Image 1 (cartoon, rainbow, N blue to C red):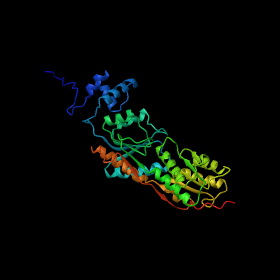
Image 2 (tube, helix red, strand yellow):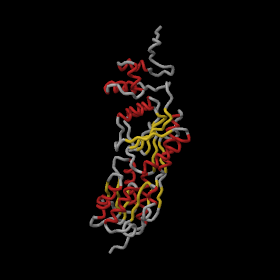
Image 3 (spheres, helix red, strand yellow):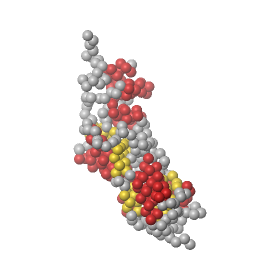
Image 4 (cartoon, rainbow, N blue to C red):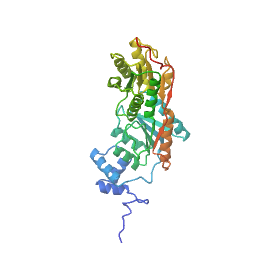
Length: 348
């Protein structure tokens, strides 16, 4: 009969690998494995990678925690310099407070993929769950979180959502469609679009919706009227100014977010044009500031706070050991008509 040394068992009571077995397979000591599992420093990169490979290859799942998870929802953004992020944080915080949890916020300084330092820090903090906003975690990173029983939800994923990781988004394609239809119904035929970065799924969808509206109306898209820029006011200003300087400029501009739309306002002012008498402008997001500019901004509303709340609900569902009914949730967008759109002025 074969017996297993009780001091270094190969499996735990639930049938999974133990720290000792991982150490044996990786050729390191159990304390070194423990450092990696708990996100602590002091392990060489090559050694850490070897241990992580063993963990993922053998499907290690931590069954018993010596310490409870930290009562925090960790939220990571690409950047935090937009009121868009604040709306999402409000939604997540509302759910977190109802469960007695705090919210910790970090940013990736514009990167789509969090770096190794962020991953180590999250593993060390061991939050109740992670909400990654417009992030693209690697398979290794998602595996590291899963092996430590840290649930992950992606909000507004930058790439195609997968079934392995629950995600929350909005109907961006339909938002682009209704924005284009609104301008076409007003009589516009020269409709420019300032889109966001192509690597963002939401921006690609908004552009496709805009194109679908033109196609349905029998309007051939003009490549000169489509621009791409980061989702900031000064980039919206620069691209709108370039559109208005064309020999045959647009009579309306649809932008990928409200900040770009405010840049288009300033470009119109610089060109001596009035909004909406000479130029109609439609934004996207429906940030609160859109109601405080003059004229008030027509925009496509995506329910940012509700998106945050939904992501928080999903991550806490996973933390409770329950599988959500849906892996992908898309919340509806809607057109909010205010004062920045009107019929085009007669050609002189």
